Structure formats: structure tokens, C-alpha cells
Length: 290
Image 1 (cartoon, one colour):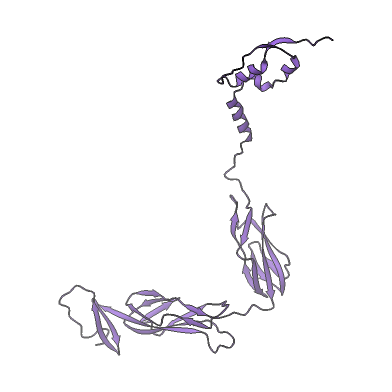
Image 2 (cartoon, helix red, strand yellow):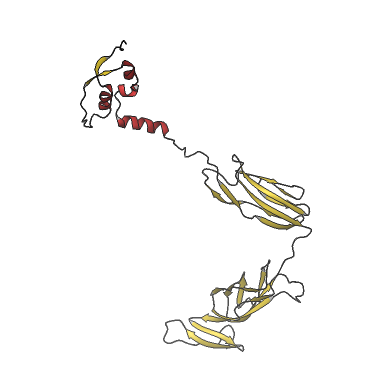
């Protein structure tokens, strides 16, 4: 049988590898051997070009590097609304909005949402998430991320014939007494009694605003004397004769030229001195009182 023509060459694989990593010591010595020409042709062309391992690595890395544009819009992977269930009456309004966003970049939660109702005849929604109810029933309001329609959040709306009845506190409590110096301020906290209270709105009044003024529970001492602060619920429940209320008696100490005084039984009583004079003269009258 006739043998194929072979040539004696230096083993091409070792030559190519030594050109890629010339700094690596090779223990295998190049030697002459019979190599088929077809085998030589199989050696990758890149090896013949003499590229180093570092050059090959950098080239591959550059081909696989992805640069994220800082201005690129990345849609959220999850959103949440300010409510998942609302009980409303007919012809009542409410507002939904996105309060939590996950995984977004350069995305505006106010303009990047589209709103829809499963039944606009029961409750309709505008482009800003504002609702208005029309008739009794149940419907779902869906917020969908514009540009990524699989990302949604849903709120169920239950519409009754009438708006659910308000539940007011059955009792209120505040500090029963308080003493302030003229010019001082103090915030009074309110305790509420009752179950499932839905309306905690109250009204504040002062029996004498020349002594103490009140606004939203904050007292301001105006002048010496005593006044009664009253807090009253804005409504009452069925069976209550009157709205819940509570009172606080506030005594205000007056200040006059370093003197601290109070008025009892229409008489002035000096109770302290905050000045530095050693020859203090006590006035015969203060605020027209002795």
C-alpha cells in the first residue's frame, strides 16, 4: 500500500503555543516528527497570528462588555399602591397613587402609570388615579406600568348604597389641670375611647382667651388667671346624647417686672421673682388688681 506523502517539520503546536505565552518555560523539546499536512491545517489561525493570552482575554472582554446608559429608562419590576381595598359610597371620590417602586431607573411613577377600571359603570378612574363611584357594586382599579404591561398593582373598590356610617369616639380624655407661665406654650394630647373609631376630628375652645388661647390642641398662655379648655368630638354615635368631650383647667402665672404672680379670688398673689434687684418695690396693683 502506498503511504501518503509526509514532511518532517517542527511540531507546529508547540511553536504556536510558545508564541502565545513566550514567558512560560516549556519542558517539552521541539523535535522532528512525521506530521500529516492536513493536521497542520487544523491549527487555529489565531495562533498563527501570534496573539498573547492577555490580548485574547481583552478582546473577548471587550466583545462581551455591556455599558448601561445613565439616561436609559429602566422600568420597575414591582409597584404597590396606597390601598388594596376601599369601601366607598355612591358618588364618592377617592385617589390612588403608587407609593412603592422596585428596580426602576429614570422612571416617573406619576406619569409612567396607566389606570383602568374593570367596570367604569361602578367606579371610574382618570389618568391620575382619581376615582369617582357611580352605583352599588364591586370593581377593580388596575395600575399598569407604561412600557412594561406585565407589571401591575390592583385595588378592589366596594361601593355601597350609602357611604359607611362614621363611628365617633364614645369618650375623650385630656390632662385635668395644667399650670403655665405667661408666654409659655403647651401641646395637649387626646385619648380616645371606643371601638373601630373612624372619625377622631375634634374642636378646641377656651373659656377665656385673655388667659389662654388654644389651636389644634396647642395652648398659649396670654395673661394671669384661670381658664377652661374644652375638647369636643365633631359628631356622636347613635344612642349618645351628645358628642364626647373633656376639659382641662389651666392656671396661668403672670409676669410683671420680674415678679411672678397669680390671681386667686380676684386677688394678686406674688409667688416668685426672676429679676436681680435687691431693693424691689412691690407695686400696689397689677393689672388693676391688688
